[in-house]
Image 1 (cartoon, rainbow, N blue to C red):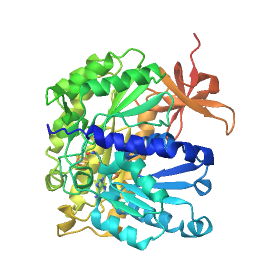
Image 2: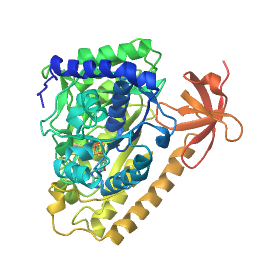
Image 3: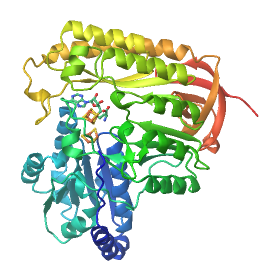
Image 4: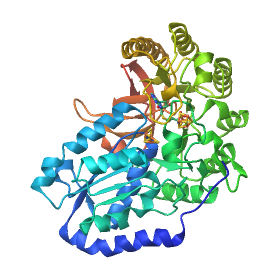
Length: 467
Ligand code: SAH
Ligand code: SF4
Ligand code: F3S
């Protein structure tokens, strides 16, 4: 948990030098790139770093995948569905590569961190030029240089991963963005592949994190989400700085108006953190707190480290301490051995907890995880039926939850304008609820007071409160 190793400066310098060597030629030729990213926000943020390195190499962003000179797949392997999509989409490029042999195709991300999968893909798709794992991100410019020189490269190391500070980042948002505070995961939930592909937990130093947040504030960003697979176990500065302390420090950065964080693990959510959320004005009244199941028996087999009762007591403490607190969650149905009774426990927990959103998944066996080796795998049709029942319940609860907002007011950070019909500005309340209201692009990036007038299926409708 306390381990933190920095990528040596010489290694980072190799990447910078490769980018410098490539830059003039690539930009003279006007080459463009397209990154297709799968998976979670950690992967999205890696994609922003890959884009940053590509800009340093002289590439510009392509509008469309098929017009790009370099296509990079940033993969995820958390569920089988994500894997199958990637294989399909890579295979579909074969023809494009035959038409344009100078096209560079790269594959990286979590799925490639599984050595056997990376090797299989490298063999199966001879037109793929480079494959690299999550621990090789900073080597990307050097690997790309080899690919441009006609060498096919497969580079996957099994190290626990190091932290590479100072990589260039090309951010996709203008007002809201993510800052990674820690990498990896040590929890080994029995269904999950993330600890195997992202390595052991390692936290960035608080000075590096705060430096990044300050620079983002100066660049006009208003909302920051602190990212990690389990931010509650952040231990920065050689173990001295807790997540609650980091959050207090971030709360004092001038120019930043809102702070969010994800993901929180219930077993590590401390009373100190709940108090910090209550004390810090900029910390939003929303938490993503994956519960996974409402059955103690299943939670135990999942190796989650908390009970249903403990989870519900956290929900209670959060609601009592933070005004207007909203919770979102992740739930898996059909975990090996899950009975109808276990599933009913999940439904009843969902009712009791009152989530404003639940991301729900059918259990997907992942090679190498302990749950994949468990007996009593649940039938696909049963999983499907449970997922549908759970989603139906959550949709109804969401409708009721949204109704409570009607007539109330709140502040929206305007993200953009939807012009499909009359121009509607949109953005989120601090509670993570999306609101649409009459307005245009001139409001983008501003914090606006709105009154909620109506609900829609997944969002709220409102009107601007003038003045
Ligand atoms: N670190 C985060 C989530 C990482 S993965 C956390 O601990 O909450 C995001 C979600 O994918 C998980 O919360 C879980 O609900 C789901 N998930 C992970 N592995 C899965 C599997 N094998 N099958 C189905 N869903 C899975
Ligand atoms: Fe996976 Fe559990 Fe770690 Fe989340 S906490 S990434 S679910 S092992
Ligand atoms: Fe997927 Fe890797 Fe995230 S497996 S969910 S992209 S950490």
